[in-house]
Length: 112
Picture 1 (cartoon, helix red, strand yellow):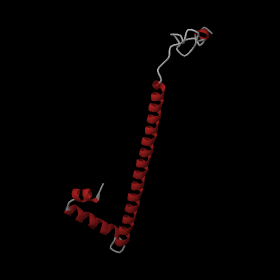
Picture 2: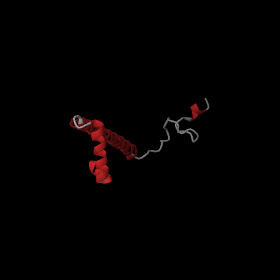
Picture 3: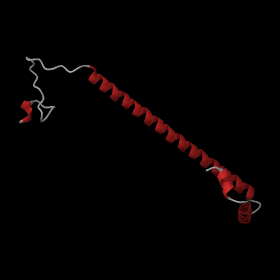
């Protein structure tokens, strides 16, 4: 929120009443130091908000970078895995073909 939004939403009469109340509550002697203190806290708040925003953007950048690395490695693995055509088993090949029920297990292990 910027000060322009605050200034636009409060009219002149409202500002006048607000300043009169602050002057009565704080007093004319302490008004400059109170205004300085409010300004310092406002500055600290702005710096903290900017720091938080920067940290969120850094986290987003790191996440995006990691996601791209995963995407690239997955696409590389897919490309490497499909680059070579599959060869059919030769008639004398001793490796048993995977079964239809458990594609990763040879037929001799299924029954165990």
